[in-house]
Length: 306
Ligand SMILES: [Fe+2]
Image (tube, rainbow, N blue to C red; front, side):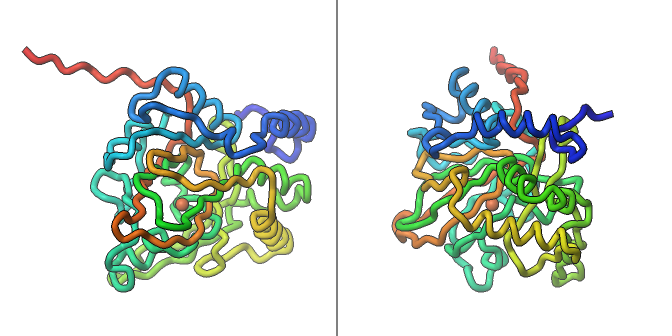
């Protein structure tokens, strides 16, 4: 049996305590999210602790490093130090499960060009993999900047626990509606060979087995069907208005080369950008079935050569 949770609507006292602690710990400025690290591939104990603490406090941390080389191992090695092990395999990702996000050369016709992450268009608020089935829920992500755009490409980040708090304060029935397993349905997507992806229904907010809160969301209005009842409609309208407004806990930053975001798949957005053709924007994106946690991994065995 699960321990009593502050996210249970029948636990108002627990919620009040959680709410007070959450607000007291809430970062006030984006600078508070930033940890300077010498090399994300090999964090010092203090750097690692600082990032874990931020993820516990705000579900996200931003690192700033001088490492600007093209090294796709970087996000993988960083993730391993923060409890992120199970990379999600994406058919568009490169073979090693980490996606290179850049404007696709075959922008108009190629398979990647259909998907906004591979264009320079703005991306609205979403969590990664919101369309995934329950067995492949994305709970952690890393976004690492190798090169930024000539202009634009600003990231917006919103801690989903603050979104939950605002929603519950406004109307607890909206929370109930968005925790329903049929709140949000992504219709089946047809491919050339028939159905490429079956319809997926799921909640917006759900609890992990460890009691932590996760969110699945998209502000897209096409290719998504919300449950047609007044509370769901009210909640969705509230979320859209909330994320479109200025909130002290909605942070915006421009990732510079060597910087990146580690997060428990918090909702994020990106402004449009224009590339410097000599130095096109390149980000690495790793999506995980794990959330950030302080699980020390066994040190890899030293290879002994004789
Ligand atoms: Fe994303």
